[in-house]
Length: 155
Image: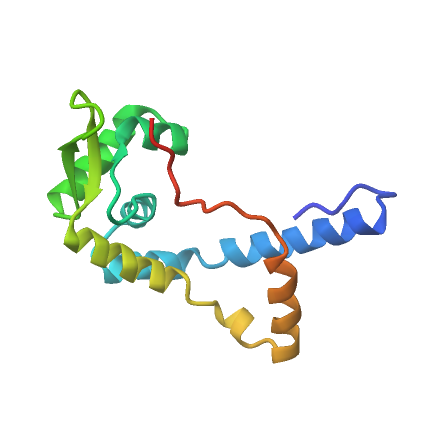
């Protein structure tokens, strides 16, 4: 990862270094994420797609396309696959019957929960840190005002 700009103040250098480590940690876990998906009989993109659907709430394919910043045809392909697996179903919107929403099925909710549980298991690099370091890290990260990346707005 590139280093902070020469002459940057200490806060900038530390923030840059911290972000670099967080990014490396996340990227180093790709095989584990794929393993979790495979244990559930899914592709990684299937599992991540499920994460963006909330239990007891529907979401339009348009909202998913906007959230994922992708072509709507890609969303259709994703939803078709999840529907074939019995994990989601399309329903007419109660608010606008011209619009279809995607809803998790009971199997989809169960699979989503299992995927999120597997995905959220801390990597060994974190679990091996001393408890005092973990306390400091957890306290510092808790100060960040982070949105829920799985929440997709309705349109």
